[in-house]
Length: 204
Image (cartoon, rainbow, N blue to C red):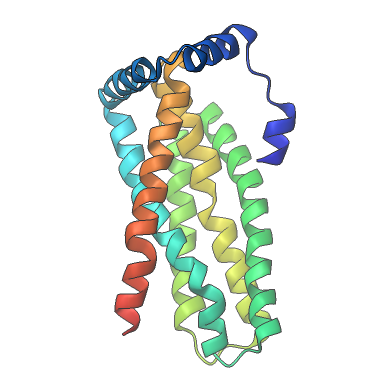
């Protein structure tokens, strides 16, 4: 996010228009315009599917925030549990990079089926890795770190290689910001509301 803030350029015309809107006190008009933008992007069925997928993905990622606690319950020390979790973060970072590349390559191969295929490959790899990571007990340090790395590496393709690029293809450029904002609002809202509470409920 910091890199985006440094390198992203906002067109002067758009930046000026937004600033004038706030300075003149027309916040109500801005809210109305945003709701109209939502209605425009909501008319796209693929946007609805990406929104629903993002909700379930967000809840899943929210539950994985308890991974360090799980590894501590598996008799790993605090340092070992933290190391396993951080290794997963490296997998996540590399997965974003590779997932975007794979999505682009598959889209060049098949415009309408390439990116969905990238998502399917990602999830098909993540399911068995998730099962063995959290069901294989007792687990040694090296296999646990390798499985956690593979899990985060594989499950991150959808975000970078499928969902975000497809949003730019299915809605008009003037609605890109609104489409991204509403999609990720739903993602994080449902993740916060149902991700952690469900983990607490199932752990009882």
